[in-house]
Length: 91
Image 1 (cartoon, rainbow, N blue to C red):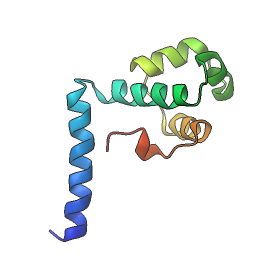
Image 2 (cartoon, rainbow, N blue to C red):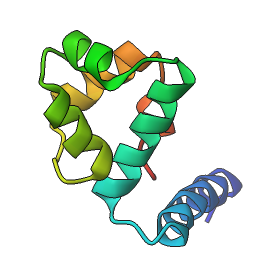
Image 3 (cartoon, rainbow, N blue to C red):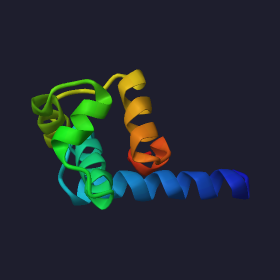
Image 4 (tube, rainbow, N blue to C red):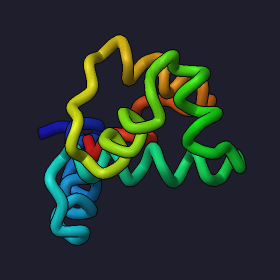
């Protein structure tokens, strides 16, 4: 493997290990990261839900990992939170 490929593989491994560390499935990890970023912006769930045009209950379910996200919804969440998807996804 080339050095660049090794660096990328190490980054992916660290992200995956972080999921394992929290003993979470991917939906729980993504939900946790969304909640963390939302709270850092001092945005409550109701405000976040309004910006996403979904219910607050859906936000709760997303942040708890009980609701899967479409690519479109994840993209909109990243836009609202002003983050790249690599800061939300574990890989």
